[in-house]
Length: 202
Image (cartoon, rainbow, N blue to C red; front, side, top):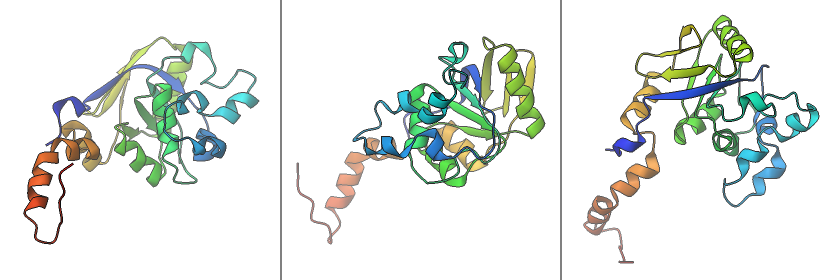
């Protein structure tokens, strides 16, 4: 059983709208940044090329969205290569959850693995959320995985998530590494009793 601190019931904070379909992982984090030894520092390079070409108009460049916690995107977000650096860069910029029309399957799985919920809503609902955030960037939003809605700024919108992923977040079982570390002693005991495993003490 995972530690209680790894349970994710909700994510709250200001939003950031990112319009456009089929935003791929190479746009999220260009390939030249994949040579890093750790994921530390990836956040400052998220959407590096898009931001450089935007002349300050990219949402991740604009001052009103700095410190935002909830990213609102359109369809097929995270398509392209399977690089886990993409969700890592988004999370390390400061994002705690993503609301979108749809997500590429591997990107979605990589987000679950690092504890960043991705929920879906209809195109009309996404447009409403992006408009609300653009008009009121200081509005506080709360994504609630228990009630399956996102609310704030006078808007209350239902969202969807795969039930298995939802349960992993709410039960804390998304954190596979954390579970292994917590159960390290049991794993050692079991391994020591297996006749085909040679277990040496560190």
